[in-house]
Image (cartoon, rainbow, N blue to C red; front, side, top):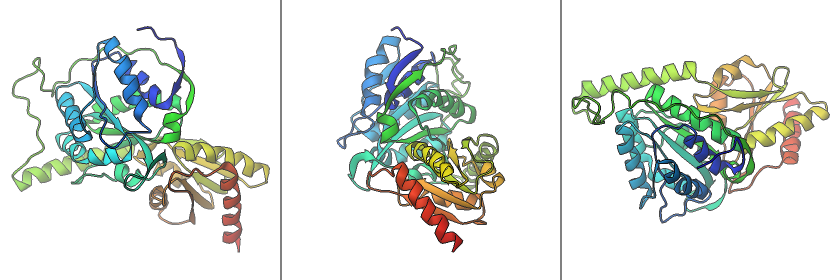
Length: 357
């Protein structure tokens, strides 16, 4: 299968091409359940078409629960494994993600968020934030969460996701919305990476038969020891892996905070606000866990505004990051509606005026 360096791809297609450019052993599981995985469908379509041509394995599972357990088996065998779905499908995977976390197995889970709750609709939304960032399964675990805002980042962050997953033996989410997943853009494909060895801990025939992977600890002290080790790992991740993009933020009096399509729209709104004499800036989180608290605390904007396509979920992390020492407002839409740039600008101006009074 021949690749050029530049291709016109949807975000959903770009994440598959990014995974394939790893040029390593990779097993992908993308499930199609009775609840349609739209707007994530192209991930399965692209993987089904491309993976076999490069000697990779693609399986369409019978349901989301089967898919995440297939990922667990592949990951335990030392293979790079991924699965993808949309909001309600991600909900079904939560038990398996908790198992993966308890076993400290690396994996990539792609969530192209759709409208909810319930069946909702297939329009874009960002209301999976709490489920993904805070941990939707049982137990005290966290997952690294990457938030791409373009097809290029969907491709590039596939590299990052697998590297972080193996570095920390952790589940990594790629969380974005239906707009980013469905938008077609020019993508520059990175050079392939060399094939990597199967990890020492894996249950592979080339590894010691004494290797053991399990998430059950019947002795309470043993399970507490696992939890303490996990919490220490999460602290190291928080210290080392915060990522964000800043735009016009250094001198901003008003700082917009948004990820995915909300972040892109907020960037354009910053330019319009600056044209009106308002010193606005943008912080776009690229990691939602760990949240970029260091940059939020460093920047001294007088007011912060979370721009979200949900009831307001990320806003809680913004408030916690700055210890609620400044006003934090919310500009949001729900149900699959997208806040327009003009709407963000006008609502920002109203919020500033109300605060000044």
